[in-house]
Length: 231
Image 1 (cartoon, helix red, strand yellow):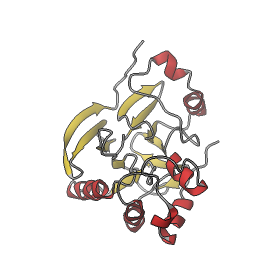
Image 2 (cartoon, rainbow, N blue to C red):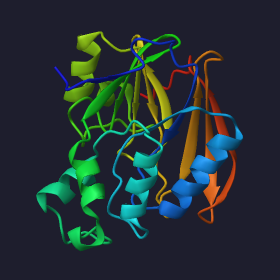
Image 3 (cartoon, rainbow, N blue to C red):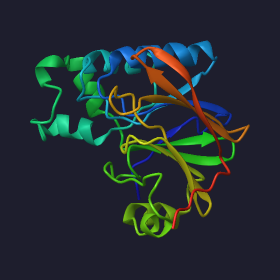
């Protein structure tokens, strides 16, 4: 069973949710995304992790997330940072770049969180559940996707109506049986950066493109009843 941290379990279910895709130290885009969500009156905001390893300031990203108490999960790059793994990656975040406060913030991140949203329970994770490098692509065939062991585990678990994740850097809404996966994409500047707003009460997901680190514009609207099956 995945490690679970519950959010808003004793309060009203979340109706509208802002989701930050893989951040990858893009502090300028993160700041712009948060300002945009504020301008839209979005109160509930979450992050799918991978805060470190990128061309910007990961330390500043941690400060913004912690200051605003944004529920965040650990990504595989955060895990690698804490274990000193994959240090030869481009733009790898060095410990010398991070404050002790930021490092402590990364250390305490759970692998998943449970959210109560309009329509049912949602799991916030980086990949699938406790598997931070698992994922399904938008163009992946139905049969190939269903052979994914981690996805099969979540479908068998029957706990979640929604899974909100990242990792692949491909924004996506895709349904399998009674569970819908919403991938928030990434803020990374060279991987089609975007921002995601999920309106559970209106059953729609809006993706916003981030241009030149700070310019945010509408990109794509997808229904939560959307079914993408390519065979």
